[in-house]
Amino acid sequence: MLAEEFEARHGSQPLGFWSAPGRVNLIGEHTDYNQGFVLPFAIDRRAVVALGAAPDARPTARVSSTFSAEIVEIALDDLAPDALDGWSAYPLGVAWALAERASAAAAAASGTRTDLPGFTLHIHSAVPIGAGLSSSAAIECATAVALNEFWQLGLTPKELARVGQIAENQAVGAPTGIMDQSASMLGRSDAAVFLDCRSMQTESVPLGLGAEGLEVLVIDTRVSHDHATGGYAARRASCELAAATMGVESLRDLAPADLPRMQEELDDETFRRARHIVTENDRVEETVRRLETSGPRAIGDLLDASHVSMRDDFEISVPELDLAVEVSQANGAIGARMTGGGFGGSALALVPHAARPALKAAILKAFAEQHFRRPDLFVVQPSAGATMEGQTRD
Ligand code: ADP
Ligand code: MG
Image (cartoon, rainbow, N blue to C red):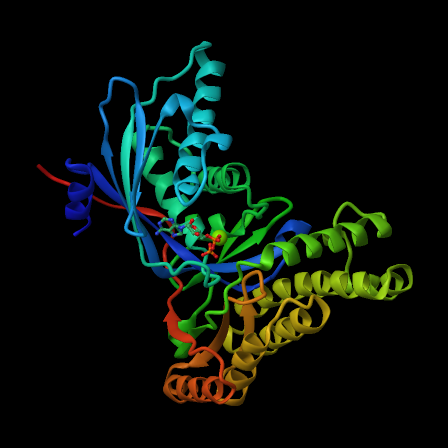
């Protein structure tokens, strides 16, 4: 089907298909830019890209998406962060970041610039936008694996995650960490990605959900987090202030034992912001330990505590997210929390398979009673990261 879409838009055949998943963050919120720990997993909703050659006289990048009617075209030589905007800044930002890397590597090896061939790329994504599932990383990572192969760059999945982050930071202009791209690149079936955002070391942590009859239910409140930019910047500033006041490089360097001292030295709001980060880092490490020793049924109270910390200390929840979490906890979930950057988006509930239908009904009823928008409810499976899907034969 994607081949037909590609042909309809571009009048040629693609060479192949690549895909990358969205992600859900199991635990570890706002810890990434504090050089701390996160534990996301890749989900079974993916962005697929079809890529074809574009043999123009002047090598050109041409991108389209089911999401938009426009086809954006730019000469590879003109790719630059300032030249890009809108949705195409995600895939074209990746192309720019990869071309920069390729040029730097070629210059170091032989003192010349590489001549990369032009390409045509069409995106078809099943990752909902703005639901806290990182539709942006999905399209970045799918583009990155496709171009890595087409341009024969030989970059590792971790390097491609970094390329996606550079594109998002510089071409899109969103000051995000590397969590989303790491999950999308490195995910494995029934496992989470434990990422140390200081050392950049990663570890695949088996979740064992299937064996325990558990599922992760996502409750997309459909409350837009578009206006979250100001809140996000303010939270970052509080964290930086707290670290500077405490004389550490980042809040990663503080532990729960430091909390009494922090309370003395920081104003109340800054203290609560910092306490969220310090306790959240601790919860992520404890979650990994419990998954390894006792399995997923043992992590419920950590998910619950994470939500309370985000609601009361970091103050990034909204009534819809709190309701989703409370109703989940009261209707059979082992644990529940809001997930993603906050101010809207989704919550997740770890729930036994058999309890799901009743939980879904209870959530819909509670939202209707509060006159909240009807949430979107769906199960996500921890899934494999970015990969080639296949080549077209003829
Ligand atoms: P999310 O939490 O979903 O990652 P972001 O604001 O980070 O939200 O990224 C969403 C943006 O990514 C969209 O506004 C759009 O510019 C781009 N995007 C996501 N999916 C697609 C797609 N299928 N086609 C084109 N652009 C997309
Ligand atoms: Mg995003």
